[in-house]
Image (cartoon, rainbow, N blue to C red; front, side):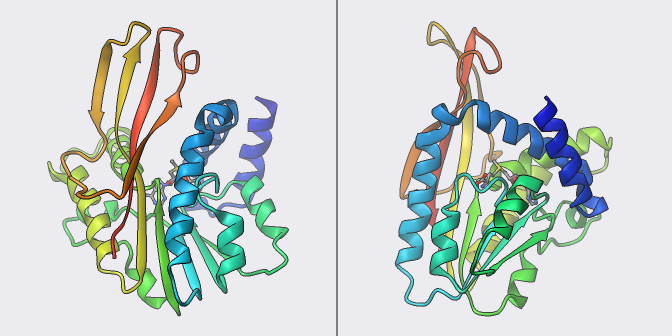
Length: 254
Ligand SMILES: C[S@@+](CC[C@H](N)C(=O)[O-])C[C@H]1O[C@@H](n2cnc3c(N)ncnc32)[C@H](O)[C@@H]1O
């Protein structure tokens, strides 16, 4: 608890005001990732290896952008920093511990940006969302990774609708946000790598299925190159009586 409080306070001081409401989520994720490090290790390694394989195919490695860079656990941060001239990390929040790690980079080739990548505000206001439009202004863009962000766009939007009591949002807001992200990725003029959880199951000790949830709200991602299970909450994390397993896919989009 003390470490979480310190992480929260240090991150708050280093985060622009509009993004501070998202710090709590990141600190909670960080604490859970630390508690579940053993259970998550294979999943994190699978993600890192997929991104790395994809990056290695590139002839030019000038700028890489990681969308949903978060805690830098499931992206091969050190390898990307070594391989690319510039690495840009984009997320709602970068924890103070992550920002400290970036300061130890002798190449000084990493930039961070706080940004809402969902397009939520534009779509709720009745407009068109172009949440990845800013990538057009990134020079020498060779590689973009969407790193376990896609499902969180839907989940984050659902929480915002509840929290802010927005009643007049379009009925199809969540699938639209998810499709918007996929379309924007597919339209990028560089190699794009998508790694995301697509659904989860809550499973009892006797193997019985308590709950199944589609995190992509009906949007299908065809032809994943690979897929695996992520034991997000092993027995004892949320309850002694059930565990939660997320289904993860990875593929290149361009
Ligand atoms: C499951 S975590 C990804 C973990 C990260 N790839 C890593 O290696 O630790 C999801 C990340 O997406 C970010 N995120 C969620 N919604 C977002 C949004 N609308 N815009 C930008 N980032 C968002 C969260 O802040 C979080 O860091």
